[in-house]
Image (tube, rainbow, N blue to C red):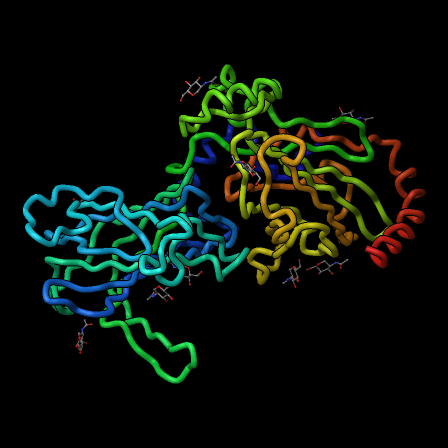
Length: 438
Ligand SMILES: *[C@@H]1O[C@H](CO)[C@@H](O)[C@H](O)[C@H]1NC(C)=O
Ligand SMILES: *[C@@H]1O[C@H](CO)[C@@H](O)[C@H](O)[C@H]1NC(C)=O
Ligand SMILES: *[C@@H]1O[C@H](CO)[C@@H](O)[C@H](O)[C@H]1NC(C)=O
Ligand SMILES: *[C@@H]1O[C@H](CO)[C@@H](O)[C@H](O)[C@H]1NC(C)=O
Ligand SMILES: *[C@@H]1O[C@H](CO)[C@@H](O)[C@H](O)[C@H]1NC(C)=O
Ligand SMILES: *[C@@H]1O[C@H](CO)[C@@H](O)[C@H](O)[C@H]1NC(C)=O
Ligand SMILES: *[C@@H]1O[C@H](CO)[C@@H](O)[C@H](O)[C@H]1NC(C)=O
Ligand SMILES: *[C@@H]1O[C@H](CO)[C@@H](O)[C@H](O)[C@H]1NC(C)=O
Ligand SMILES: *[C@@H]1O[C@H](CO)[C@@H](O)[C@H](O)[C@H]1NC(C)=O
């Protein structure tokens, strides 16, 4: 009973139960995380209105990656979209009732996607045309916004007669959100760039969408492996962490990759391009307890991509460990504590440095990113025993990663205590050198 003092969160048996019970949107690591969709009516037209729709990703560590978001809703009446700037409806629908001017979209339940970068300027507005890619708030608030403009016809033409669209849906690749009903809110106020004039939307309504893991995916998409300097055991990811249903389609050798990629180059079909492993995850996070100093300890973290057909741009990693409240230095990654005003303060997000390692390249020699962390020991709690030095939870791109069962963690041999202490004087000196010269 080595680990009974600690509430290690997951075992294989309870994992799926956990996922299902957590599907109710609330994320304790990001309690106010949501995507807010704001409609600002900018002008009334003879048969409707022109609105700017702004989507803001307030989630700290969950972003929307390529191929981007899809926003849907159901019109309350018989509205049509005359035109759009900065986005488009995926399906025009049946506009056969119209003569002359044909609307952009006549669907009762339109689905809208962002435009790709590089469209002509007259089809753009601010914050549009990023292929639906939206950064997380924690990583880059300036890139966490996406906007488009639409002109709506056959709609109400005043704030008394207009009816709000209903049943919003927001999907991203592998992500599902549940959205609230639209609610009229105080009109947005805009200030011109020079700060000399204020204008106001004629009417504003908001929709709030929260992440819903049950919609997002059935299996985990990442797993955690572990090792330490005090035990030569490497604890692998649990077998079939990400489900083994695609095991007979995985890629087993480099030559096979070339064939498959070549054969399927013309079809843009997303086939399963994950390397064959015991865990079958596209992403593995390895946590290595590397060094012990007198007052500090050092961890090496490696994220490996096993997907041969995916570059993870703007990836994020969230870790929960009680010693993160005393994190002293992070090499090669950016770090930001999550919910830093709580006394626990044991959770933080890591992400890549811009233009250096913010893209986790497809599987292969460059398909990994690494960092080392130095943590100051909290002398009351710190121990190498009972797997304390390993993370409690890891999330990659907002998805919780499968952890090994606690009894498989590298275990501190009983005889090791004295050696560790003997080595720490030397190690402290090394740390000093590292802190000064790196
Ligand atoms: C959405 O997120 C923002 C920013 O964190 C927060 O202020 C707001 O209360 C959230 N809204 C809801 C409905 O949770
Ligand atoms: C509608 O607009 C009028 C002014 O045009 C304003 O006085 C009124 O408060 C608005 N009503 C709502 C519900 O926004
Ligand atoms: C919106 O969704 C609710 C519940 O799913 C459904 O009852 C209602 O008919 C939908 N409204 C429209 C306009 O589709
Ligand atoms: C509506 O959404 C915007 C973000 O786009 C936010 O700043 C504003 O506070 C929201 N209004 C309400 C009443 O929630
Ligand atoms: C190419 O893709 C198709 C699906 O689009 C798949 O059935 C086929 O197995 C793939 N080819 C190879 C060699 O994997
Ligand atoms: C990933 O990025 C590399 C370098 O930019 C590129 O050569 C490769 O085609 C990309 N892979 C995918 C699947 O987009
Ligand atoms: C939480 O930790 C960060 C560093 O990781 C530190 O800057 C911050 O002051 C801490 N907050 C509290 C309340 O301890
Ligand atoms: C670690 O952090 C906690 C709270 O943030 C603080 O109370 C404690 O003194 C710190 N320990 C060390 C060794 O700095
Ligand atoms: C290393 O850890 C493994 C897994 O917990 C354990 O079985 C083994 O006994 C440990 N090795 C030593 C030398 O204690």
